[in-house]
Length: 233
Image (cartoon, rainbow, N blue to C red):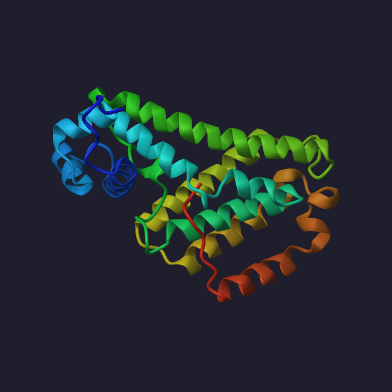
């Protein structure tokens, strides 16, 4: 909070939004303090007074990224009745967000601090913890599916969660490299073909009892309408 009698002379939320976009586009280490103050429209002393440090600002930017009303991830996992549908929705919703031309490509949590020098290891570890929370969300959804009889009890849900998180994070890199929406969704088509083998091809988990081809066709039809996703994760 600004000191009494000295009201803040800038919009803190707008400044944080600007910082988020810059960190998302350039990454933590490649974003200089001078770049931040220019993008945020504030002085260096104002930045430190409002946010504490570059690292603290970055952590707030990640929190903003993850808390957007239209963010996908946990919502995608919970709104569908089967685990297969939920995981596919998570992948497709994020893929759409990753290639959205109105924001930097890819996922901020995946891309903004992949490699850091010794002075910034805490930032790298912080994002690794964020990605671990994504794994826990997928794993929890699979645990629910086992409890509901949607996925066989013998399925290796740890491996399944890791597999689909690897696909998700790979989509982020593909998006940053310039892949099209069609290519991203084709990758997801391939990933979902693996579902029966991963869960053990038993009962309702087998591509919903043979409906996999229909599901892929429906997903392709939806993509033809150019439906756009929102912010990733």
